[in-house]
Image 1 (tube, rainbow, N blue to C red):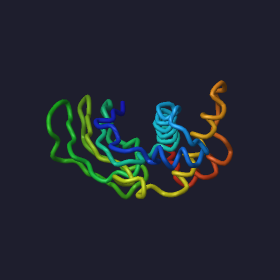
Image 2 (image 1 turned 120 degrees about the horizontal axis):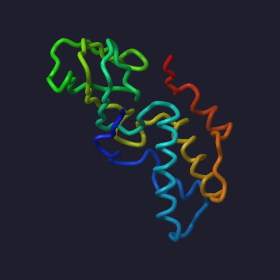
Image 3 (image 1 turned 30 degrees about the vertical axis):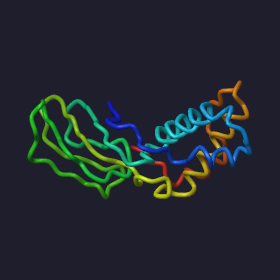
Length: 166
């Protein structure tokens, strides 16, 4: 199970740039738009298996020889606990996509790691930021509809960033 240990300190797109994109010139919907931004980020992060804004996460998993970290890009692995004890003999591969941790485990493993493109919205690739704006626009304009798939343009913009596990 993946747990965000910290909330992102900022969202990948700002309220001001989103309001400009939506052509909203009043403050009445600021709360709604902020909620839509967070929802769009979570949707894309889950769909793509990425972390946009860098933050701490924890993976809890039953034992296996190789653990695939479910968010990318991973910048560091802080701790690996095997059955509640600090592991000392594990191998981390941050260059692999998805990043992996190899450890001999008995029953249960917890891995604390940091993932994300960076700490500022400008660190995130432009196509991902554009896709977020499009998702927010769709949700803002069609509040009564819940789409079952991502819009085609969002899918096209995000395809190169999708991390797919086999």
